[in-house]
Image 1 (cartoon, rainbow, N blue to C red):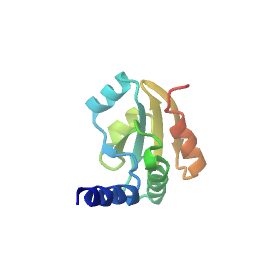
Image 2 (image 1 turned 180 degrees about the vertical axis):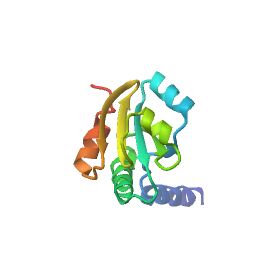
Image 3 (image 1 turned 90 degrees about the vertical axis):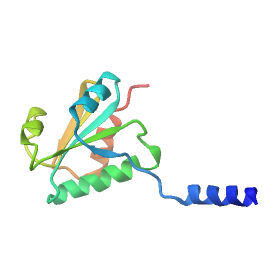
Length: 129
């Protein structure tokens, strides 16, 4: 019986969809802690009404699925309600993605949905090998 349960649990685990990176609302303390720890970070300046933002979100989910970027921390800044914050990061408009490796900005994209370019931006957050 226990083997049957274990086998069933394994089948469920294998067939479950791969998890993508967790997107969380921007939090200054968590961002500072991630920078201090040298973590890979993505800032997403997002507007819920923006079709480009939606396309970027789908690309990010796809590119981070299956543990492709296991340590990546994604912080979302709301374009409509957090204007001083996105301006602090030098963003000019919604659908801006800003990548960091710790405290170092490694790249940014604005109004871009090309999956290869987003993949390259995410790859830049990884520590060199």
